[in-house]
Picture 1: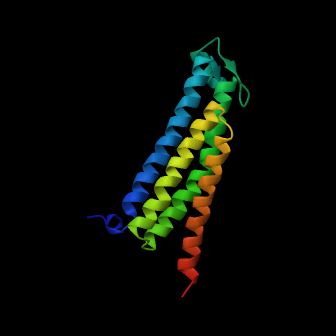
Picture 2: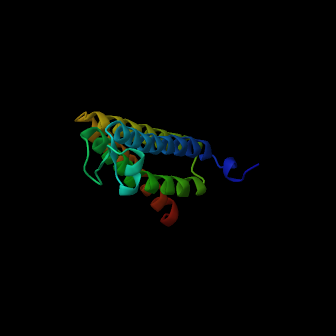
Length: 149
């Protein structure tokens, strides 16, 4: 049996990591799909596959740009959470604490991505802030566990 799997919070960590990874993959593929539907490429060497395609680099249609921005935002936030959640898991946090932190974080980030892509305010900001609060709490648990007592 994997030693990590015996840690109390590991299941919550693994599920949240899986969900966050799927969110990133979904956003990346949606970006590529909307770019293809708009007949846009970001690299000149890709143009021979579609002679009509425009090379857009960072520009392009708004739908692709929105997916790209949502993807970048997820890329900025997911790695720090996956890292800190792993540290907290390795510190032996309980299954309850892991579930109460990791599952909501994943849900908030996925809902943030949906709201970002669809342009839904104020919920995009609300879900961002809720995920940020969870992240700060995870950091607080790490700091307390590392430096208290």
